Amino acid sequence: MNGLKEMTPLLSCPDDHSPLVAHSGHLSCPLCRRDYPVLGENFIDLLPGSPSFNNGDNTGYQSYYQKEFSRKSRLILNARAWGRLDLNTASWAKKRRRQVRFVSKLLSRTPVICDISAGAGTYTFDLVKRFPLVIHCDLSIVNLNDVYQRKQAQKINNLVLIRCDYFKLPFNHSMPQLICLDTLVRGQFHEIQLLSSLLSAVSKTGTILADFHNWWHNPLRRLGLLPNNFDTSYTQRQAEELLKKSGINAWDHYPFHQEILPEANSFLRKILPPTRLLYIFRKHENSANS
Ligand SMILES: [Zn+2]
Image 1 (cartoon, helix red, strand yellow):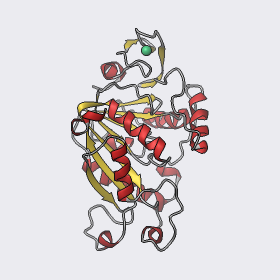
Image 2 (cartoon, helix red, strand yellow; image 1 turned 45 degrees about the vertical axis):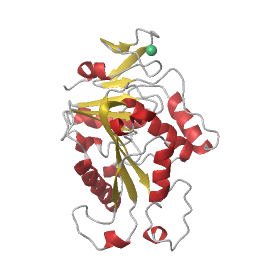
Image 3 (cartoon, helix red, strand yellow; image 1 turned 90 degrees about the vertical axis):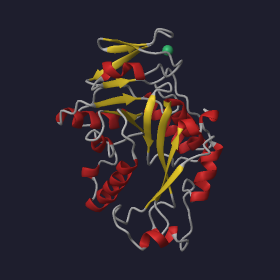
């Protein structure tokens, strides 16, 4: 499996969840008759008809989401995604690569893996070396174009890019494995909506790997020596309360320390709270709520 046509059975209309039909240059929904344009090789727009996220309490994210949603889907030359490893400092990129290595050890061997809010492709370009098919989902047309250009330049043929709304994902209980990292940072309303959307996208035996930021990056803040002034930072207890509010009651927890090599058996890991709280949860253990 290495392309859009082969993966069409995994896709559904984001508005009514009907199976989609592949044509030359577009996919179509037989129920609502919408066409979804193919923008480039293995690159498709699967946005719903209208934006679905609405939270007046978080006006910053709400306006970002509306603005991104309203951008036209098209190919953009020389697009630059925020957070590209090669366009940031070496020390910043090094910490991100540590997290990629940590995450890669937690993943199951599935024929398909999907990254939701995949951004600049920090995980994507590692995943394509390990999985037969990788689906990179993002709302931002700029981010997607940046990844598309690099995919084409590197001749990667097991990567499909999908422009989508995270709250109306174009998968109907079809994905065997989803990851959603560095994204649950918008406040409880957003987090609960997103977790619910992820659960509806995975198959009966599917798994989800998600993370929460824990007092962001500063070690002094994590030790309680500085105030926690981030509204969207979570302690382990808070993250797990949020999972339960989202109908997720069974999980495996994996703390990640960005300062410490994933392979190292460091004393620091015992005394310093982690920067990321990673959780794996399985559909069949939480299926009563999705
Ligand atoms: Zn439809």
